[in-house]
Image (cartoon, rainbow over all chains, first blue to last red; front, side, top):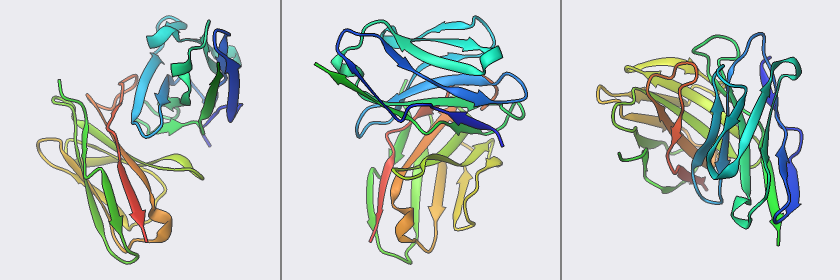
Length: 115
Length: 114
C-alpha cells in the first residue's frame, strides 16, 4: 500500500536552533509532495510543495525541503526555530498511484520550541 | 479572495442522529475533498468531488456520503451517528485536484457525538 511516514511523532528544539522534520514516502513513481502546518484549533496551512521541478523547495516562514528520489525522502528544515513554529506538521503525498489519486497524509510530527 | 468556509463550526449530536456539514470552496475551485481528523487515527481521506461527481473515496462506511452542487459547494452527510464519529471534519478545495494542485483547507467543523 502507498504510504507516507513521518519518522518522529514529536520533536523538541530550543529557540534559535535548527529544525529537521523527517518524511519518507513509498511510491512507484514521483508523487507531488507537500508540507502543511496546523496550529492548535486552526486549519491546515500550506508551507511548501514539490511538483517535479527544483528538488530544493523554499516555503513560507523560512522553511525549506529537499526532495531526494533515491531516498524517497522529503525532509523539512528551518535554520532557526521560532516560538511561533510550535505546531503539528504533516507531510502529504498526492499521485502516489495515479496522477489523480487521493491525497495521503503522514501521521504528523508535533514540534515543540523551548525558549 | 475568500478562503474555504465551513459551516457550522461546532456541532453536538447524539448517537443515531444524522448530520450535514457544508463547505464552500474558493471561487474558481472545482475540486472539493473531505477529511476526518481524530487524535487516534490522524487525518483520513473521506472523498473527493469534482464537477459534481465523486472521483475518489476513502475507506469509510456507507454512512458517510457527500455531494457537490453545480456551484462547487459541497455537503457531507453522516447518518446513524456513532460515538466514534466525533472528530474534526476538514474540507479542502483545489482548482482541479490534479497532480501538484495545492489544496486549501477550511477551519473545520468540530462534531461531538454524545
